[in-house]
Image: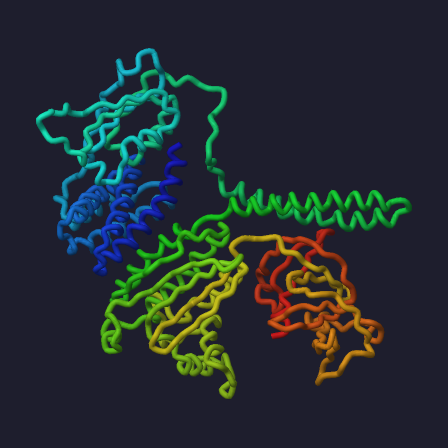
Amino acid sequence: MIDELLAQFLVEGREQTLEAGVELAALHRGARDPARLERCFRAVHTLKGSADLLGFRPMGQVLHVAEDLLGALRNGEDGAARFPALVETIDQVDRWLDALEVGGALPADAETVAARLIVHLGGDGETQTPRALASDWDGAGLFTGRSGVAIRYTPRADSYFSGDDPLAVIAAVPELADLRVSLAEPVNDHVLYDPFRCNLVIEALSTADLSRVEAALRLVRDQVALATIAPSVPTDAEPARRTVRVDAERIDHLAELADQLVVAKGGLAELADQVERLVGGQALGLALRARRLELDRLVEALHTTVGQARMTPLAPLFGRFPRLVRETAAALGKPVSLEIAGGEVEVDKAVVDGLFEPLLHVLRNAADHGVESAEARSAAGKPAEATIRLSARTEGDQVVLEVADDGAGVDPARVRARAEARGLIAVDAVMSDADIVDLIFRPGFSTRDTVSAVSGRGVGMDAVRAGVTRLGGQVEVESRAGAGTTVRMTLPIRAVLAKLMVVACGAERFGLPLESVVEVARVESASLIPIRAGHAFVLRDQVVPLIELGQAVGGASSPDASGPRRVVVAWADGELVGFAVDAVLSRTDAVVRPMTGLLAGAQGVVGSTLDADGAVLLVLDLAELLA
């Protein structure tokens, strides 16, 4: 149970440190927004309660003092000078979370670090402990003849100001069997009642096991006394639960099985064809096709549901970057703030897992070479503190992540000069500024004369493109002189079933995205119109260029160029284009995986899948074939 709580704490801890860091950064910049202060307070309050529950005493001590300081700020006290210490505290909590994720325990120097932070926060450096629990309380006499976990919850007098609802807290305890509410102190009729002061004692009995009760009360553990007054009575079945924690590897395995099921059911179409060719097999073939349609619906629903189960928000990933950017900026001597938006966007777990390194490279490059020094910014009329913005948004079935800085931008002339010096391009090459800026993604490219210990604009950018490509995405860069640089990554939100048309070119088979296909036409060779080195044909009074698909993918042209041609008419890069093929074989649903390894950068190939017979089928990007 402790391992499960720790795993949950690491997930929630990242989210809380992200929220606290974002709100503290805004407050430190001068925003006096009570709502921001309240969100920051709640995040620290939640972190403190969880740390206390799991026994991470140094972390809980520091957060206890930070919570007190935020409470004082919320009550109107002037504590602006303490904001750097609060930011430092959140950064240290983030480092401790890293240590817990790796080793399951705080570092050996945690007590020393905690004492130093407490002094910075305005504490006295002495050990800070929450109000002692009534550990000797045994619950005797409260629930005579009953069994379970007895609870005595005495909310703090200022619990309302902390955002706690005592009744909601106790209501969240699983399997409550009894509940009693009384006054902690008698009310004097001659004294005006204070509605803002909590004066309750809540006593309850739960038949759940102790660990589940502790987990439910983890955020107010310093205000609760628990006692097991008798062994819990075992039950034959657990009550229905709204959520179930499942190991990520099981979900991954389930997703692989769903993908294989998609491939397996694709073979039914070929089987139905074989049956219909048999004598008297027409009726059986039609029945097989009907069953296949039903199976198609169920498999697609299963695949979609498994994909949704793998979806996870970007917030925990984004939460790892504020501290890293602050540390990088401090090492460079530059004042830099990181703004984050879109953490609530959900994408496939594999995408989240693979994005850390690419985003880290880009953020470090932005802090190192994207933004100028404070002196240079002031001379350019900019605020001394630079801003880097990390954002995410969805566009259809894709997620777009952007890292934008307000620095000086990438100088195309400097990039071109360095590329020419390194032999990456010819001296007389004609290139647009956008194409020149894109050279920063070349392996080993850098505009620096010396290697930076932190990063460099272009140092590691080839790794960024490679990492994004492995995830099935694309990356591009936009830059404006004096106004900053934006690195944009576009990736699939999740693996979806692609509808493909399978065509043959000689002995090879390829998949074409069915969404791009307009129709399949039969074109007589005599009606082809020579245009330069190629041909075109007229389709309903419109001239359509003809591309030999076999030649476009590096193969030979059709062996029979004199007879009628089978042409797939499709939209490619905004125009109608005809692709000559030898045969149109079938239509299928498939899970398209991005190309990896040596084929990761293959021109005109969007990914691969398995055909019904288990053979690898390359899926083509028609627009890229024309580039």
